[in-house]
Image (tube, rainbow, N blue to C red):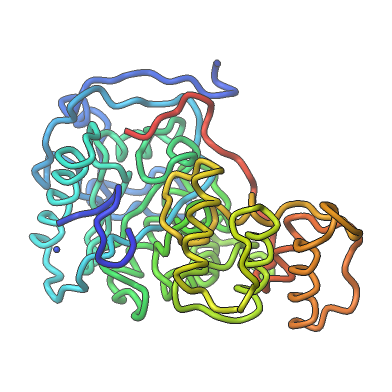
Length: 370
């Protein structure tokens, strides 16, 4: 969730190969699956199971309809922040209250069947099961509970909510340590590479999980790798991404975005290099035209791949404003040689966010956010 605005995650102040889904009853079945780290040794070597508070223990409500479970393993983890106050209370009770508040908002306000995220970590480092059955299915290590934390990623990714707002401050040491341990355990159980950890903004037009926590993801990948006994190089830890642009930003990246918005027909205004209200309106126009989930004027991981189209050097539609965007970025970053055909990886390098390529796997068709 971004800023103080309550969004879809807001809280109070075809067979095994492609993945098929089954429906299991609500939390009365959860106790058959749940095992926390305090009850015995880890289920696999490499990453010990952290203590995770299961849904009944924090007072979860019954889901309003059966939880869907897919016969496939997730391939990545998405990190979120709740964008709530950075409270000082780090007790277990505070963690329980947080989990209940999230569930109430998701069910009462969003109309979802349960909490959207699979797991929640409080400021005090308390790890809690979010959506019912997530912990038991994780311990099993073969299937995936369908979440509601990020459209397009609810079956292929595990979603972890981190309590607080991490735009200008780092998470608490307790939260960070629990996040690392939880990610390592999830990677261990599902065979997910420690490099496959991403932020919500990598896939949506959102500031989540906050600028500071997002910049810590390379460190998280490296530390999770170390926990699993695998060295993650600096090159592996840095993942290709898209810059997050919003009101108040300025510079060559904004100029390039403005050229691309004009190339796409979202505006006729001459680029200024300042992300003002007119630019935000142009972004919203583009988002509406491309059926973005969040029409919010923020240019992030959902809209960039469509805006930064494949462009070839030359006149007219093959070049024009899109190539002016290329020239702007190449000049700023002193790139002497640019391919005659610019695709997404080159755009990301020109934007200064290049790194190891991201696997573009999304949810199976027909997967809904609920």
